[in-house]
Image (cartoon, rainbow, N blue to C red; front, side):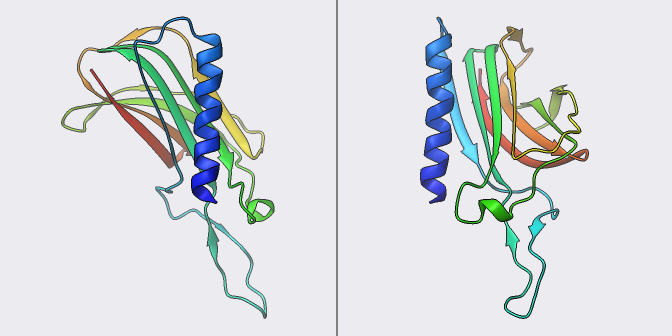
Length: 158
């Protein structure tokens, strides 16, 4: 079920870019559901089961680039769409950052998104402005919740 959900989200992102983009020299799209913190969404235990942890959802990231010139980036988060979706909490106090790492893995630039205090099952951010980076490396979308990185999805560039 996770694979189907990931493929659907990736397809939706690709279609949205193909329909509204007139030049795409190179592009990359991917989705990830691995969490990077211990802050999970537990279900309260009762007499029938112990506490279990559910994945929050998926972060998908799309990027168009020509070498070190990135012309567009989109990132979208959605709560898990499986049978557990009604049990997954909304995300509150979130933002999506676009972060750039050099080939050694050192962060050299962070384009911090606006923090949104509203609570919801999904979040997104788009940048359609060209950005020329000083070196080759990796571009990542990071979902931050309460100032802590929860999800990260990356693509090499350059």
